[in-house]
Amino acid sequence: MNTEELQKNKAHYLQLCREYIHRDGLEDLLAYLEKSDFFEAPSSTSFHLNEEGGLCKHTINVFETALALNQYITTPAIESGESMFSKPLKAESIAIATLFHDLCKVKLYHKKEKWKKDENNRWLSYPGYEIEDEFPLGHGEKSCLIVSWYMKLTAEEMLAIRWHMGMFDMGENGSSMRYSFRAALEKSPLVSLLIAADMLSANQKEKTTTY
Ligand SMILES: [Fe+2]
Ligand SMILES: [Fe+2]
Image (tube, rainbow, N blue to C red; front, side):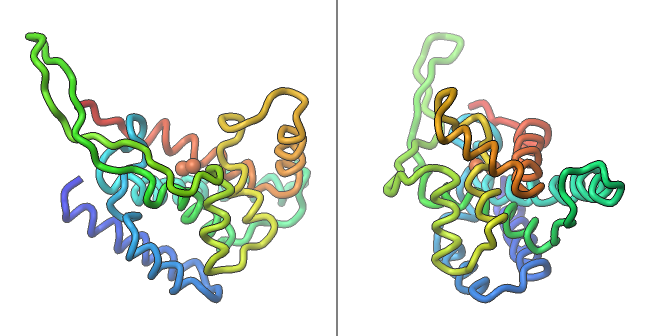
């Protein structure tokens, strides 16, 4: 991503936050993100949007995907009575859960020169990232904590952010972790909405750069 795209995505992200979220602490949280590497960080080291600015772009993708899923799946199911849930989701909660779900990736990826062999078996260096987690609390758990430093989360927003990795970040069969995950899915449609939006964005809208 070039500098212009980075700036455009940053402005879009900040605009979405301010348009959809009207909760105490938002400006403090955004000030924290502006001081951090959030707007330059990649979304992963070697998978979806593993490039500069990938994290911000991924986050916007998850927000847009979640709004579409809510419009076409979640809300109609609630309104028709098919859903096991009866209360429609608030747009503010969808925004909070999606726009802040991966704050655990702040200060996580560090630029590092990497090496590979070319077709003539010669070593080539390329710009890569390595993971160094100075506070390894857990993926969703850490995102919840960082948001909570600045803003109060509702129970359903916290559950959605905490469990957004779904089965990719799960304990063994029969564990209390699995029981809690299942119970969280039944507490609010926001939990499965965020998992689905994250998965669809990462796997259908976000390319991996091969160096
Ligand atoms: Fe995540
Ligand atoms: Fe994500």
